[in-house]
Image 1 (cartoon, rainbow, N blue to C red):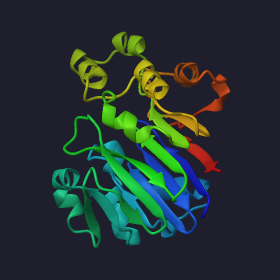
Image 2 (image 1 turned 90 degrees about the horizontal axis):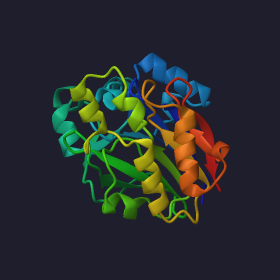
Image 3 (image 1 turned 60 degrees about the vertical axis):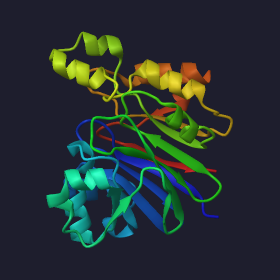
Image 4 (image 1 turned 180 degrees about the vertical axis):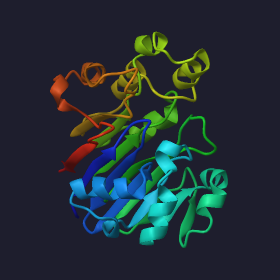
Length: 258
């Protein structure tokens, strides 16, 4: 079996993109950047759009989907997404050459990658996140959810690598300049996971196979990499520098799952 590796083009409210590769199969999860920016970010990872076997989409929020249609159309890349996400962006996406609707509970394959979607509570039409596998290793990604659920915990248990949302520190959010309605949305059950809840989720999982833990989707305003690392490292009882952070500007360089 091929070695699986992953990287981030950038993670945060200004744009998201996540790459998973096994052998000749390379899948982009979400694209919230304009085409020129996406091409430049792929180049940092020694990739080009022509290397992409497909794009899987988690939901219709702009920081995850705004670049999908243009990139897919320009480079003839197939797209996979839920019916709810397609319905929310039907005018933009329905004209693409290859769009496949997925069920949030049914796994599918893109060449060498086996992909399991799973439903999450988030304020979108039919949001999902994904677990990727090349057959023996599992990479779980969770970047947009307001809270954990038993289904999320069951799906992410036993992964070899995890990318986990640490959007905000609750105290920083409470003291921020955000209007009350936005604070309620971000911190609510259909918003984004805070550091403490991310740590509690992580602590509840079977982490016996875990090789990589990455904090993702950090707020520039209401979080810091140090606070996210502290939270996740406390859950794993590991050194803080073992916890990686996918940043908005630099993303995350390749991580190999052995």
